[in-house]
Image (cartoon, one colour):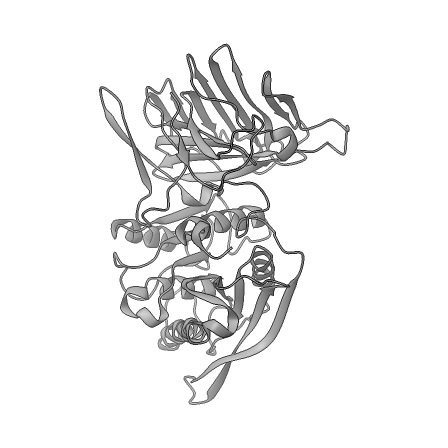
Amino acid sequence: MMRRLLVGLLVLSTFSVAHTADQTVRGSQLIVKDPSTPERRKITVKAKETASDDTLVGDPVAGGATVTITANGAMPSGETYPLPAGTSPTNQKPFWTGDPLKGFKYRDSRGENGPVRVAQIKLRKGVFQIKVVVDGKLGPVAVVPPSPGSDGCALLTIIGGDSYSVQFADGELTNDGAVLFKVVKPTGEGSCVPTTTSTTSTTTTTTSSSSTTTTTLGFPYVPPPGPAPLRYRDLVFAAVTTTSNVTYGSAVNNSGQTVTLRLDLYEPTGDTVAPRPLIIWVHGGSFSSGDKTSPELVDEANTFARKGYVNASINYRLEPGGCSAGGPTVTCIIAIQEAMQDAQTAVRFFRTNAATYDVDESRIAIGGSSAGAITALNVGFGSSEDATAAVAGAVSLSGANLLGPIDADDPPSLLFHGTADFVVPYQWAVNTFNQAIAAGLDSFLTSWAGAGHVPYVQHRTEILDQTTNFLYWEMDLSNAAQ
């Protein structure tokens, strides 16, 4: 059965039908394996719907596609994999082949674009089929058995065409710890695409004649639909204009000295759109060191500036000695509080000067790494207590919420963390995530088995992609200035 959900701008499809929609397809099999080492991880998705009224809309041979796979349960995970158009530089063969009559098939046996070995979508004699195979031998795979798992989703999106949701919300379930998660023969179908009508809604309910099931949707794992280039999703701008050492305030440190607070501003060169969403980035360094020019922040600021955001990387007060997971000192607690206060000052600075920097006051997000991630979450979960410094979303790489409670009026959060992080223990991030969920908030935790502290280089693509998706949905950027 086809379920049409309008999710973006109208585009001209292969059949000259103007729409971009999500179609649901009855799944048959979802298998997520992690038998031992990461290179042996494997994911298989299959869907087969007879007497289907689904249609093939779009041409991945021309525009490519993406596939997003999520596995939900005790330890949920998800990842978006690119399936680009074009030709292999190795064997000169196209990655995508086919047409709307025969269907389309993607092949990448060498892993030149990532770990997806094969993807297929076709409609023959009323039977609609989808198949995706992800192989850890071809590249990193972050989706692992949720141990135990409850459900899953696979979303195949044709760039410039429709998306196709394969939901595994019921059926025969198999869990083998952290080794295997399997769902076969689901009886229902539903959409994997989140909506932006409610910023606290992360579920969709599919009702059959015999039961009602609810599947958790993962905003970070679902790319915004629509033809490229799409502002706030794609790299729309070729260059970035950087303005260094903008003064955004001053504050007295623990030694009684007045510290001038400065930031570096990153804006898309030649941009005429106003107002624009803003991301404030906060560096790490145990609250005793570090700088706004930290490499991962510079990379993130430049990337999101090219997508159409205004970005600010800030310095803040630092205190000798800093902090460690071994036990907080009085100076450490003061330093954490000072960092939060200074980041809040940065939020207020841009609200006060919104017209000067063409910033959308309702669409301000904050992110950071390590101590900066702690600060970002502290500011995010302090939003309900101070509307002048409230943000619309918080992104954390190797951080946790350390100040104050989490309330139902606080913003959504996206956390990235390695399970072998001994600087900011992984359990702290789990606790933060659980508290946010308990408060009824949208919160997402991407966990990397065996990874340490701030593994940005190893997981750069995943971090940028998930942050892009998360902010697009949660800040309702389809309705922002374009």
